[in-house]
View (spheres, rainbow, N blue to C red):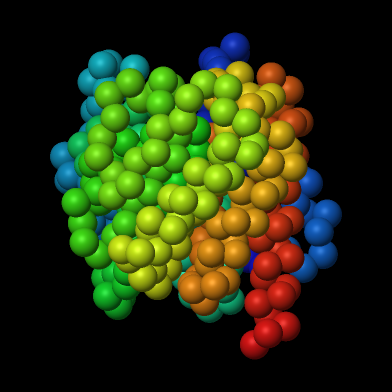
Length: 301
Ligand SMILES: [Zn+2]
């Protein structure tokens, strides 16, 4: 299975910054122990790739360091050339994960899931919207129905604003109703969960959400944002899923892809554990399940 990594494009942050930069290198280290997972550095997304989703003015402002202080505050990262490079690589990684998924059934981006980015602005640690960029990249090669299944605990507001009215896509967001972003956008399906939601309620809801999707849309590609932040050990998530519950969640999405014989590209999205190792384990568990799915898929071919 192909796994695209960008953790060596480190984005310099002031000490004490709450973005867990180190989780990405820890995750790659952990994943590198699995024989059969091929770690690959992706190319950077080009201006042409980004312009299918983002405005030229925004791409230009990001690239040349011309963002306003307010725009930089909303993103939450200080501007640097490395920040631009990392953001382009991360979008490139989701593009590559989609291409590999189409070839092999499943592939992963060890970062990505930057679903708060809009056409003309970044937000909440998101500069470019990798899932939207990748969806449009694939559709530019060939008309493809793309479902974006966003199970990060925060609403995929940027993705909803970009694709929530697009009939060639289906955006599904299952998120904490009271969590950031406080002004939600309309996805094709939004499902807001109460604080403290536990495994069974979450999984029942996800099952219903997937049935809803299935009744309205036939995906030819799934981009799955497998945020680790619904986990009970998360600082920002406010939900109470156990590690086993998170595994059941991932299996439910992988089974859905399997039933529909639909390629699935997975991005990691958020995860802000009190203990960073917990977050890394939850992400690593997703990758392990994806890897098992990949092996099964190959065996069935
Ligand atoms: Zn999140």
